Structures are given as C-alpha cells and as structure tokens.
Amino acid sequence: MSSFTKTRILGIFISPGHDFKGRHGKSRLNHGNESVNSVECLAGRGLLGDRFLDYKENFKGQVTFFDVNEAKQLEASLGLKDFDTSQLRRNILIEGTELMQWIGKCFKIGEVVFEGVEECAPCYWMNEVLGRGAETLMQGRGGLRCRILESGTLRVGPVELQGITNG
Image 1 (tube, rainbow, N blue to C red):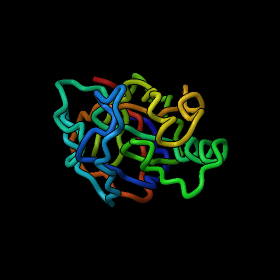
Image 2: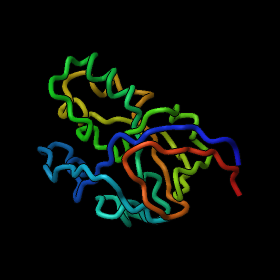
Image 3: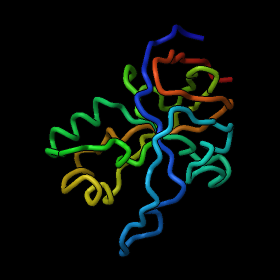
C-alpha cells in the first residue's frame, strides 16, 4: 500500500440506457443522466443503475472517471454556457489526482478497489453533445476507464485515494 491522496468526488452520474452506442448514422437517444449522491460499485459488474452494469464479462469501462479541471478547460475552450458535466457521459467527476497515472495500476477510494485500464477516448458524438471541436479537445484527456475489483459505495464529497500494489 502507498500513501493516501486527498481528493474529492464532485459528482456521480448514472444513466439507464445508451444514448450513442450503435447509433452511427442515426440521432442520439436521450435516456438522461441521473446525478446521485452515492452509488454502489459492484465488483466485475459496474455501477448499480448504470447502462454498463453487467454489459459484458471483464468489461474495461465498468466505471469512468473524469477530472474536473479538464471539464473546466473544455467549458472555457468551447465557450459553453450552463455546462452540465453529466453531458460528458462519464460516471465520476473527481479532483485532486492525475487520472492517467492510474492506467495499469490499482487504487482504492473508500472501500472500493479499481483497476485503471485505459483512457476513455472521446468519440465524434462529443461534437454533437458539447459543440464542434469537443472530440479533438478531449483527445488524450477523455477520462479514465476502470474495472471494479472490490465492491463498495462511493459518495460525493472528500475522499482519500490510495494506490495499491497489484496481486
């Protein structure tokens, strides 16, 4: 185990359905995003109530994290008015850690253990949701896709993040 980093979860978002998946050449669906104060993270499955719960075995995107500073840069660069971070279609809005450092590593927030898998690469749908140029601006900073290794509850508010050794 390594030392704790004080971080903060600023938002938790779940959606009951896919707005974009399999929609190429069609208009988006609108299942909406629900902002919640807490969410159950289920090991190997995903977030209770979210569209990716039990999506497929060993799915790399059981939960997605997004850095609030990246959201602020997007908002400023695109001149967004009334920007709602749930539009990013990421689950956890966080501050206080460099997300990309967790790729290939495990970390713990509260009782929940995650494996950082890969960047959550943006797709062309971000241009529709946020505006022209959003996909390009998000390249290399689209958030972090993770697997859930140990179940537990995440809550909005101050949290301690701890890197852990694999195995």
